[in-house]
Amino acid sequence: MKVLGISGSLRRDSYNSALLRNAPLELDLWEGLKTIPPYDEDDDVEPAPPAVARMRAAVAGADAILFATPEYNASVPGQLKNAVDWLSRPRATSVLRNKPVAVVGASTGAFGAVWAQAELRKVLATAGARVVDADVAVGHAHQRFDASGFLTDDDLREQFDELAQALVAAVDLRQPVAA
Ligand SMILES: Cc1cc2nc3c(=O)[nH]c(=O)nc-3n(C[C@H](O)[C@H](O)[C@H](O)COP(=O)(O)O)c2cc1C
Image (cartoon, rainbow, N blue to C red; front, side, top):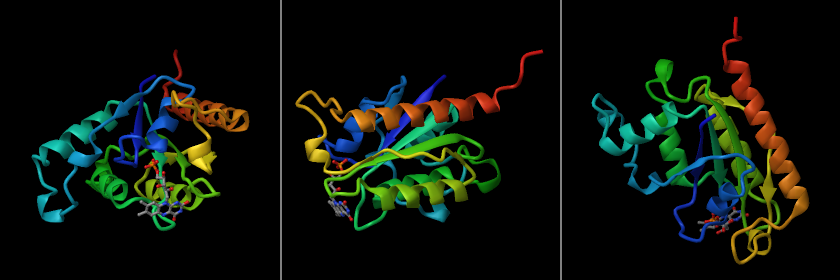
């Protein structure tokens, strides 16, 4: 199973990127978010802008996507929302349609980006993705990782295990049953 990890933070020492590196399943961490241009419907033609085409191909080639989002002013960071807008088109055949996705998040505040996660789930569901109903909310993120980036909270690791299992189950549901 191929899982693509998409962090909504561009920051080098991002807690959300660190969170994805703690995922209890193998994933490829996508590094292209900063290369994605602002969504412009006039530019959303074939061939797509090269960075967008690469992102769409990465998503299309994955069995599932695991997003980690920071919370900016109680919502999804603009650059991540912008990327999802590109991924959501063309609507009928978008690479997100029926794609199993899960959302986790980290913030330095108390609530662990719960609002941003909820909004991202809403946006992904609107785009036609199959959104796993589970969350991992890492509050006080600056206190939850050791110097090597290891997530030290056992409860959060257990929640991450459960979310990963739900994501695998969502992928399995899509596989044709062997004859
Ligand atoms: C523009 C901006 C807005 C923010 N708004 C919130 C917020 O609404 N709630 C929250 O818990 N943290 C907020 N934060 C703090 C982020 O949670 C913190 O910077 C976090 O480390 C970002 O994730 P990252 O480490 O993956 O970059 C904000 C940070 C920035 C830069």
